Amino acid sequence: MTYLITGATGLVGSVITKQCADQGIKVHYLTTSKDKIRATENEQGFFWNPKTKEIDLNAFKGVTKIIHLAGATVAKRWTESYKKVILNSRIDTSRLLLESLQKIDHSVTQIISASAIGIYPDSLTKYYMESSTDKSDDFLGNVVEKWEEEVDNFSTIGLKVSKVRIGLVLSDKGGALPKMAQPVKFGVGSAFASGKQWQSWIHVKDLAGIFIFLAKNDLGGVFNGVAPDAVSQNKLIKAIGSALEKPVFFPNIPAFVAKLLLGEMAQLVLSSQRVCSGKIRQHNYQFKYPKIDVALNDLLG
Ligand SMILES: NC(=O)c1ccc[n+]([C@@H]2O[C@H](COP(=O)([O-])OP(=O)(O)OC[C@H]3O[C@@H](n4cnc5c(N)ncnc54)[C@H](OP(=O)(O)O)[C@@H]3O)[C@@H](O)[C@H]2O)c1
Image 1 (tube, rainbow, N blue to C red):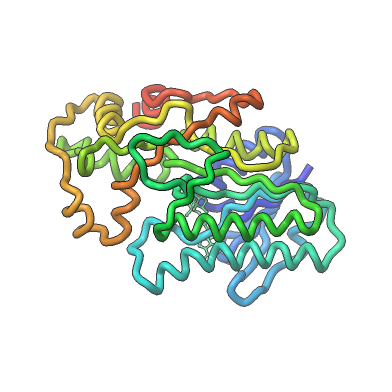
Image 2 (cartoon, rainbow, N blue to C red):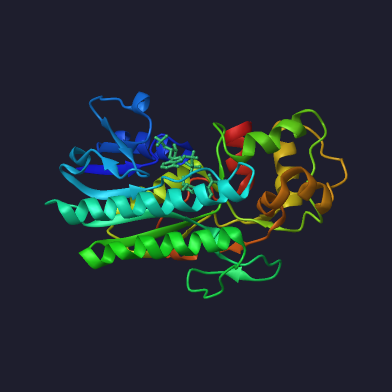
């Protein structure tokens, strides 16, 4: 069994690749960096350049499932030109995969794509299921909506399409957690604004598990990739303090300071989405890290 992964060299992709190896699934991956190409018993890298539509079509040989994660990071200042990179990197990669499949004989039956909970509008009170028709009309919401539309096009060539709306991924290797934990370690950690905003987090190993679960069980449609235990930002910062055995006593950082520091990207720390993972659990996916304390003790304890 061989899966093709885009963005396999990133935070989430590297854990999916490892879990595939543990389960005897071979991984082909597409990378934009020639120096990240490796060939081992379990993995084989291939080059692509979605901007120029260059792609090594050998990447699709023997592949039955595509896990599509590639996209430029959103954790970099959102200048007007960088906003285009965020959107276009997701559109160009999706289109190049689809156009490639249209050109060749292949054995791919399903694509499981990353998406994001940023598609849901900022709200302190709503509880979002996959069936929600509410769509955020801010920058991230628009990016995610266009990205999902692009991924839906794979159904026109008969592929099953699965989309994982990912929440705040917790990992000790990168992403938001090490940045949040650093000030807490030095006794100056605090939440932003009221701190009441919901943080729908997920342990990276559970998220990787969900991608493989959807592939193995042939499950199509939208799935929220979040743990069952969304918490407020205040609670998240306090839980980080507990895992590190450091008290959190600093007052919250006002919203205007976040906006001064981060510009429009402050949306990432100020917006609130309480998201439900009931659908994946109904399909019997078992979370290894369902509670925030368990997840943080694993990553920071
Ligand atoms: N981490 C989170 O909290 C979170 C939350 C919601 C959604 N997501 C989404 O989940 C996906 C995976 O997240 P992640 O945290 O693993 O991301 P990541 O660590 O930033 O990795 C993304 C990968 O995409 C590839 N990439 C970067 N820029 C690209 C570009 N311009 N064109 C084509 N490929 C590019 C890179 O692979 P190569 O260098 O090998 O090409 C990179 O390793 C992303 O699409 C992200 O938006 C993540």
